Length: 162
Image 1 (tube, rainbow, N blue to C red):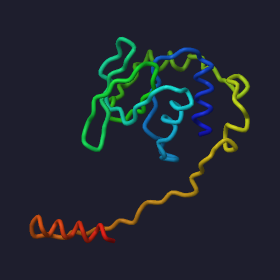
Image 2 (spheres, one colour; image 1 turned 120 degrees about the horizontal axis):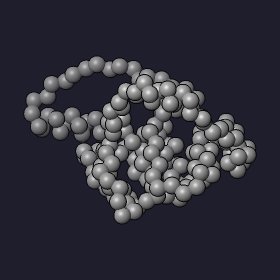
Image 3 (cartoon, rainbow, N blue to C red; image 1 turned 180 degrees about the vertical axis):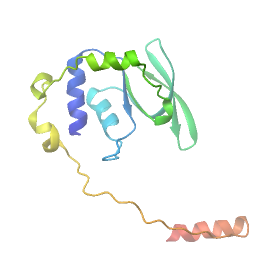
Image 4 (cartoon, helix red, strand yellow; image 1 turned 45 degrees about the horizontal axis):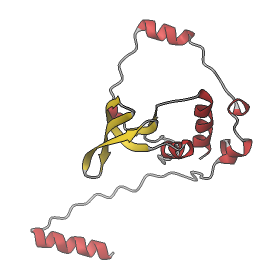
């Protein structure tokens, strides 16, 4: 929440926008909360797990997103926010000229006062969640051969009762 709030304050300070792109999730907290929370704080629609942006026209973005059933086509009004999966793009290598230009580029740095952020709502103090620890699940290897559909159904029903 603190990260989303801080980003929202910065975005509001920039002025009008049409589309915000966020990664799906970070590798540190791995919660996938920042994009949707940011959209909510900005009061704009969002779509998660976007794998392709088809087009942007007539005040709408047409996209394809991953779902449990495969891929789903959707359209959102602008402004909106999309969280994208890594499959959306294959990065290309920068040119030498591009690297040199980037090295000389000026980066504007804002602090909490510049974006009108409340000190109580940013940083560790503003966070409502904490990652206490992370762990990998124990690897369980195993295989069970089943003799047909009825054996599969029995096994699934037994598993469901557990």
